[in-house]
Length: 251
Length: 264
Image 1 (cartoon, rainbow over the protein chains, first blue to last red):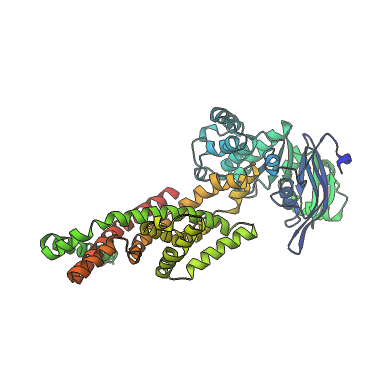
Image 2 (image 1 turned 90 degrees about the vertical axis):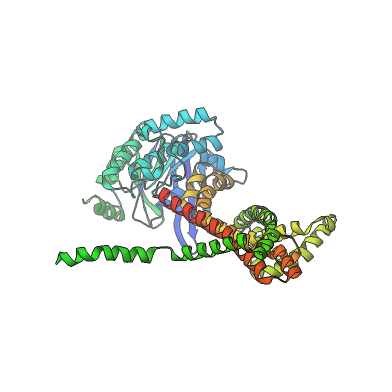
């Protein structure tokens, strides 16, 4: 596998399998994401796309197969998973902000405890990231005082403050009220334009069309097909892809 | 139509405030007040009170020290209880179930006269230097550690899985995630339960009297035994414990209400 690695590959997933008990959620998925590339994974619920994403930072441990982040083999014994996770930002469907900490503390705590940055430095970086996602004025608020869209933007800032090499998004807009989806997608679009390597699971086809270099369609634990947004949306080759997209693009 | 309703309203309000009024509190405070008056006015009860009350220092000392140690034991055992390590988890469960299966009084005797001395012997420590007070504290700490372990476990499990995942996803170790993210939230959630266990421990500290430790209950028994004034002794004891637990439980209710307001 090592010799197959390309220096430009930021994420390499090689023949990934994942079982939950007897249920096989992922069946032999292989995927490469180059540096600066934005890859969007789409597919019906239960297709294994979230599981693939969660295997990339080992929130789920693959049953078999390999994951490499910037050349580091995650399953290797000598790999320190905490160090790898610090380089991989993750944004969750349910935001998962720390409710007992202020917005600012949410964005500084990992910088302090994991990156060992000085308080002033962490504070400065946190304010930069909060400005980037458009809510520096909420620094002293608590998560429960924010709208869903604001919370999700704080979650993005929290991940970005670690200066990750890769950002993972697990259905970041699925728990949001419709009027808040745009503010989160706009932040993601900015990130994509800024050259961030992104792996995104989403149902927002608009984002896929606007930002994705490649769309990956998954069904039943496998990648059915991969292609540019143009090809995938206008002329997919598989019937399963056509069926799924016709349902989701109908409205 | 509306006339009678309006007329009835004051009565309805009165009736509902009658129902909601904490009569129980009035009754308990009434008992405490009557006792306080008797302590001041009745020479016999006053004598009993003056003999017994110095024990309050030891009672509070045993409770505070025992509870402090129990918190540490409870936290460790609670974390062990949910550990993925089979050995650690089973050690924790064995401890918890062992303690839960034996009466508190029996456990205090066993811990004080069997386990603590043999452990002291085992580590080459002169068991005569382990005072009965210390044995009482250790025994209560070990017993309450098991109860608190389950409280801590429940508290940790009440925090959504997403919190641990978010903490790990930014690179925190399991320990860091527990320390900075999970436990602060869990402890806040279980603080009322911890308060209740503190009150329970204050009451159970009376069991230290079986080790002849001169806390409140032991002094009450000594006084009763030497003067044959049983009613006076035990009424004073009841009064003293009830005054302490009532104050604590009112404090706890106030704190819980404040906690509830904060969460909203």
